Image (cartoon, rainbow, N blue to C red; front, side, top):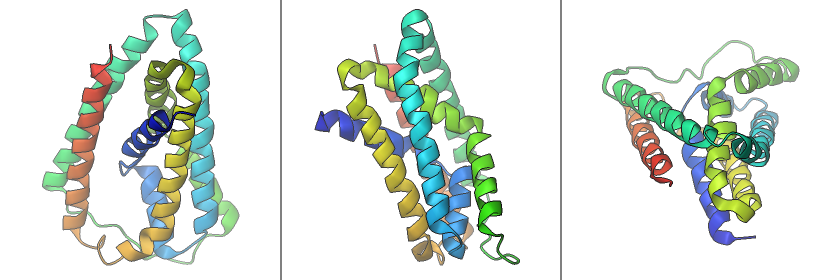
Length: 202
């Protein structure tokens, strides 16, 4: 296993997954409320692992059959990331939102997992990040795709469990709109950086 490619996979996966969307907000909220944290983190991480492996193992084969697909996906993926970055930057400049951590009676475990699975598997952004973008990037590493996939999967587990179990420390922070503005601005920079790297491939 190539350590360099493994770390590239991990950092790439972390950069893509860090964007606050429906899935990450759900995990963060569960962590802040301390409700079913282990089950939620595990569900998200395993789901991501399945999709990452699908992208790394299958996207390259499909791209070999359809040579135009890989550059097409890189261009469309970069365009999406640029748009997402603009969306995040606009939110950073105008948003007054905070994360609501108070609520009624906590739902039971089956209901929580059902909601988690729906947010994960019915979210098109998840497929773009894991299957399309990571799958496309993995084609650049030929025989080292296993290392890249292992790194991306490790990054997913690291992120979700850190987010879920570290959320308690963030409780005083995310009740302030300013915190979300800073986070959204950081997300915009990350998205634009990934888009630039994606377009830099030959």
